[in-house]
Length: 336
Image (cartoon, rainbow, N blue to C red):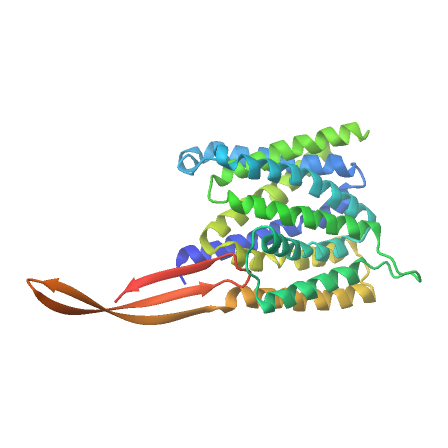
């Protein structure tokens, strides 16, 4: 495995850890700030924080490809969805257990894959379909409120709604992920944050106290800014599917932190949902990383030289990886 690949895997894991912090800490902050206002501060913190990093890394960052007019549709879609999704998520966090919210975030994998399949016509393997079914089942278990009447909690449904928005947003971002990471994250942060701020003020949510606002900005920089930044950087090296596989650890880390920081009790439904979610996520990871093999091909080439036919045999190693979600089909040729 090359050094760049190892670094990319570490970046993907870091992205998961950074984001895992957001759910339990947001649950605490929601006691002092409105959900839409918190969503605004989280994204503004991401945009401002990465903007400051950009000032110190400008020389290297300027080598990145800039967004152009052809990227406008996906950029606007990314920003609008990043306004809606965090507001739904913050309301969901406020209404249900943070540990449940962390695990329900894995429904984003399902949403991303289904949108990629139906909208962008990407292929999905039978194993991945099984993983998506298991994750959906786990999400339904975690969403059930456990009362005598069979219905789902509003908070869980809001989290699933956020996951659907982020699933579509992931596909929009993937279309422009080869462009400047700094530019993408700054645009996400500043414009999505500003949009959420307008919604929060319109809904009558007041500005937070200075210390609460500062904490929200710092959380946004770490959990959204650094997480998105490291995710996109990892994606550019090892591809979207593999990055998503490593990033799937985030909900489990978030659930663990929720239990430690918030002392939340684990219900029977949570344990069952956790088991199904882990199994489904494991199947998704296996499918993502499974199909990789090598072939050595020999080609016979005939040359016409001064009226004589000369035969030349060329052998080369043909290594290719089939990514389960259909997001990549990579061919690498090494001459022998």
